[in-house]
Image (tube, rainbow, N blue to C red; front, top):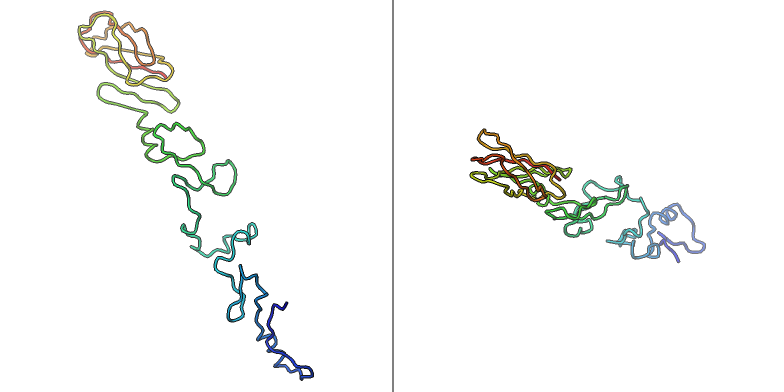
Length: 219
């Protein structure tokens, strides 16, 4: 099975000349047997060429194609494998690794608590906004460590005895501290009891004609 077609042929007894020796080599072409007809082929000029799509990962040795072998701009987004919806390419394995799909989660409450996923801009904003609420009369702020600060008012005009005040948001575990003071400069004292995660009770020691403001800390 020949893989090269001779550039010229010799007959028995024919005189050997320099021209014929040169033609033997210079005019030689490759035979189809020189290729596997799948990854490579022989064109009409007798040259071995790579077939369109003939070489894939199975024909490439590990590490054979490096940056030096790639033309600038040769690898475009359209030539990369499709990425599933709500996924991004990255590596969250904890060590060097090939890129893989990383989940992008759209959870306003970050309930998955994942250390290997990404979050959408919308869910981050919703989560941050959900950690605080303010208006002119009451509000709260949740701090990163879990501490919650709350404030509000207690209507005390003409009220005697204990009244219940509900916090703007419930503490997850415990309210550790509540302080309350009358508005208007009288600074009357209050008794406080039944401090829970969602409310507390307070009573002015003397009759209070103004509203009172409270400040609470918990987690």
